[in-house]
Image (tube, rainbow, N blue to C red; front, top):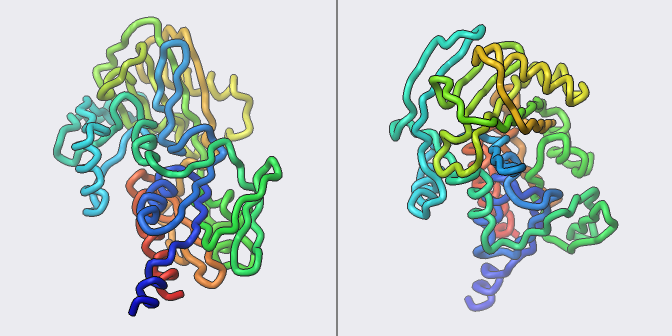
Length: 339
């Protein structure tokens, strides 16, 4: 009995590549019983829970909000609210078609739309607390060493060995690391993802558009929000506009100044006034969304001890990313239990 107990309690080393929502969630679920190391090419956690500070302006330029429907994520959001990390965004919401407001409603506690206080990246920072994360580390290859995995970075540094590797990356980036022999490679290499542009405008004075956030249906834009309407926002007056995925895909290689001009002209048409911007910034999200709900199997290769997770496996939302990370952690634990 003692020997069986020791086997059951054995810790395994797990590498998670990608410290976005899915990777952080998987790490948090596994960290109580396994040795977890995360790797991310960025200087901080969060992926599309992204925030940028420039000249007194603060922009949430990735995920604009999130909702919670699945009981597991509902429970997590309740914990986050109790910790003072997130709050509902009680905003004046509008829908715009062909430059005209066609619907209005208030966002409230019923079917709440949540944001992290002050900045969306604060949510990622909260989830990253206590985890072993190697930032500014781009993993460029995986190679097997007997029954374990070694990771090599862009700088030539070798990490490992690891008993299991979870790729919490966009589909194309996961496919670039996965071995062709794994069924996960076929899954990742055939998945479709769409891009998006985020236009950030720092204004010289507050602006009232009669709404705080809007879903936009046109050829160029898909979203517009007034930053100071967000709970806890502390920056100077600013706007964030997101392009539509289809338009972004058709203009993904265009020069930045052309993208800015096209998005800004469409934005000014909607607000029916010139925007006095003293700061202009643009970010290209190459892998922002998936075009439809995708087949989530397979997500784990037990024979090679590899797994994938991320919102692209289901739908491009924060909740979807959380749930794929949550689920894959328990699948990995089941492999360890079987082994």
